Image 1 (cartoon, helix red, strand yellow):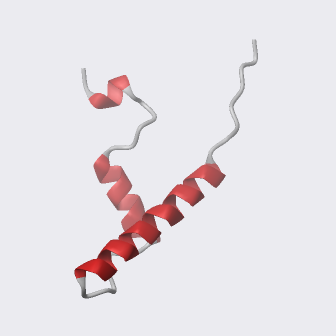
Image 2 (cartoon, rainbow, N blue to C red; image 1 turned 90 degrees about the vertical axis):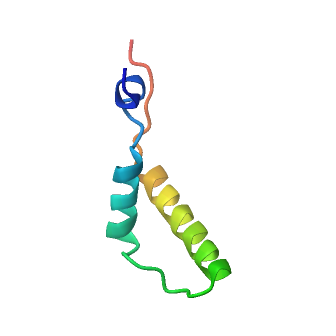
Length: 62
């Protein structure tokens, strides 16, 4: 059984990276490792916020 079958709504690492590249960009602007770490943390925070806004509210109907 694949991870996709167990967790069908969970993104694969490849899909997440593609989303990051599309929204944030393909390259980092910082040259230092510490700057890249901060840049990546900010990018993840932005993506998580955008995902949270786009998620529909779900509730039980029956």
